[in-house]
Length: 94
Image 1 (cartoon, helix red, strand yellow):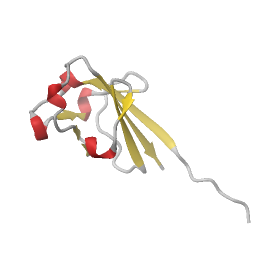
Image 2 (cartoon, one colour):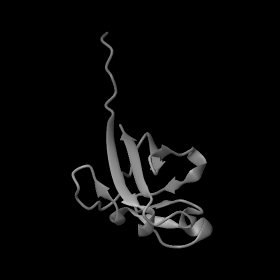
Image 3 (tube, helix red, strand yellow):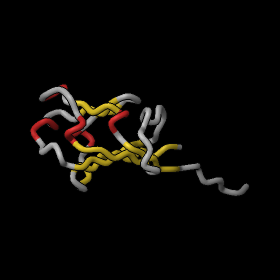
Image 4 (cartoon, one colour):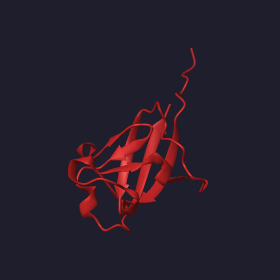
């Protein structure tokens, strides 16, 4: 029987910390504040994914740094960062 590789694809979204709202533990950035790989405004994050990576200023973050839903990414304490700090969220979808 042949081996069938699973389908994997990446979806990347970019924004800056300045697009977020809230403070401390409630600091969050709406999915609509991001652009996708084509430069178009995002409407939502993927609803089903294998995992995601968060990059803040180009540095990958540990899993305890954020939580994500289809509408927002929450980064506790993110409001302490400079508003121009770039963010990239990469989802690996199956």
